[in-house]
Length: 340
Ligand code: SF4
Ligand code: SF4
View 1: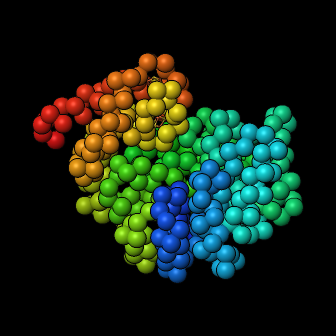
View 2 (view 1 turned 90 degrees about the horizontal axis):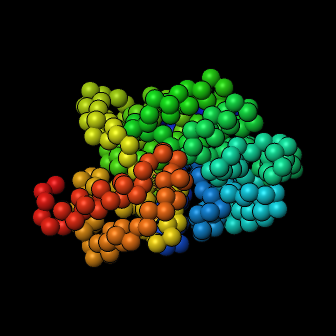
């Protein structure tokens, strides 16, 4: 079993965090079964957010009787202290607990610090002093904010997208967390669905002993896969290396990670899926992408007014309107019979 300690927090768990964003999309009963099964098979770290609609409530319903045996990480996207306290109180109540193990600022556009005028970091400290939260973390998609958070020495954990498609800069971030004894939580460990080989994804994470991947789990089959890795963690073999190298080659250039931070779009384009359609067509069952519903979503790209809001918000610096147009052209050709 591979174990991870999240830096100064001392939180030590096996290398399978439960990412609770996707349980928003399933019924209460199915979410309850997943959460319970995860717990019974040894998963003890659950990452959710105030922003994930009923995810916290589902965790509260299913796991409150084993509260002292698990770690709960949640997040607030508050930009002022008043909203911070409101979010914290809502999260505690929905999670049916009186403390959060790790409370994280949810992808702020800046790195909250004491004295910055927002009162956010001061509120974090006060909540920690009161015992409502145990550790302070930050999540982000922007390299600059993540670097600032590490330099500030104010955060015990950093949650950032990380998988075998990471850039050199992103890998450097991971090393810097280790040097500074900051816990690193890897989100998007499957790159929003583009990595389809979970063994390879796991084996890569296993190379970094201080990194805790959180797997977004929606189906029992996905959960079973990760549960099996608790006792039999995949390690780097020649075969897995070849899978990784092939994917790295295929996805080497700038590609849309599907994070959705560029949205909303004023004309309602579902950018996070449409801007990576060419990859989805080739890396997931094609019939899922050719339904009438998806065709209508892709057609909406014709309505783009080139306002540039999406590219201005994209943390990866993508030329999103161009990416959308290129993906649409390819999609239309595939619909017309182009071979994949
Ligand atoms: S440039 Fe096009 S896709 Fe991007 S936000 Fe504006 S209308 Fe939407
Ligand atoms: S275009 Fe950029 S911000 Fe939008 S979903 Fe893709 S990676 Fe995320």
